[in-house]
Amino acid sequence: MDRVDIKILGISGTPIKDGNCDKLVQVALKAAKELENDEIGKVDTEFLSLSGKKIAMCKHCQWCIENIQPCNIMDDVHEVYKKMENCDGLILGGPTWVNTLSPPLQNLFSRGRYYAFFTNKFRKRRRRHYLVREP
Image (cartoon, rainbow, N blue to C red; front, side, top):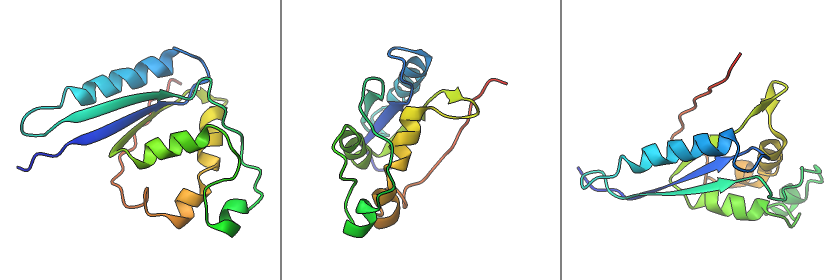
């Protein structure tokens, strides 16, 4: 088997610094790191919390669509999407607020129209989805 080095990014979408979601994403990254061995290859992990990040909501101004470029609102979303582009695997964690995503995750996803419609950076990746939720 060919050795493959991979980079896994873990994003916690809670606005609460050092909260449960931060801890759970870090546990998942630790488990991924433990898969590293001589046959599989090196597993680099990085943790990123959206707590304290300034990520505005999409204004639906169509600038990204008309200019075929990432959103022109200058905030922390560009740093996050750059890290997402450069990773091989992505672990997302976030709380459920009123049966929906937390505001930081909603804002992050709504600002990704350019990446969703004009790039193949996320489309051609294999996906696995897991949802863990308390009733």
